[in-house]
Length: 298
Image 1 (cartoon, one colour):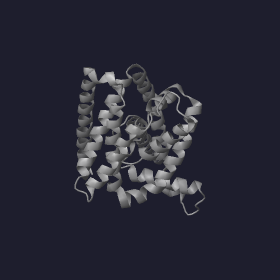
Image 2 (tube, one colour):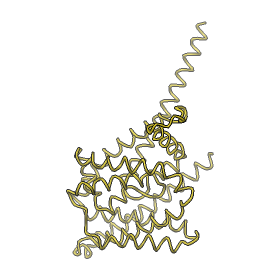
Image 3 (cartoon, rainbow, N blue to C red):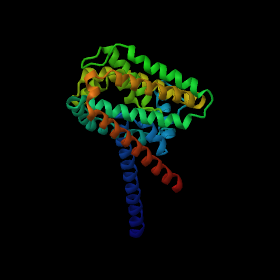
């Protein structure tokens, strides 16, 4: 009997260690996802997709939403609460930690930070477009996206230190709505809307009124995207990604155009743009490397 108890306790300890490792792994993944979504470029959805967690997260969130809305056919066993909970904790840790860094950079190096983030957006969008260039009607969808993005040049700048409440809600709706889509960064939407700086400052300073309005829009956008994402990705995945990538490139050009005119003679900004392009290229190569190794192991 003592031997049996010993073996049982040993099995429990082994299971506990596996559970801790599993949760720590998901927590770490959440931190990476939060970091990716905070800075324009690679999206949190892409990170989940590359690590093989995307389907589990999408289906679990979809089932949670259906359960909240009163769908009795949803089984508790189909929802991976441990994955969703640890991911969410990791994302929150990452966002609040790195938001301070982003806030500091924008306050002290505003134009430099914008140039660096714009370069990331452009490179990642072009990279995605080169992968989809052989799709039917590619040029039509690309030009549609570019036109929509360039149209932002003619829209009055809505991004300031104290945006109107409906702009904050719209920012939350779009950023949360896009953050779960592979290849599209939610923070890119904030940069295009001109509310990136005010949002990261509000997170860093824990501006409750701003964050509540942002979260209100975010809940609507996130819930809607989870419900519609399967339909969009199954039927119009490539077309949607081409249009949005074109939009991001066009809007990025618009953001460059919107910079103070005297900054065009600042050689350091050109250097930062080049550094951003090189950084994006390195990140793309690293992503390919780790993805290739992951596929070999599987």
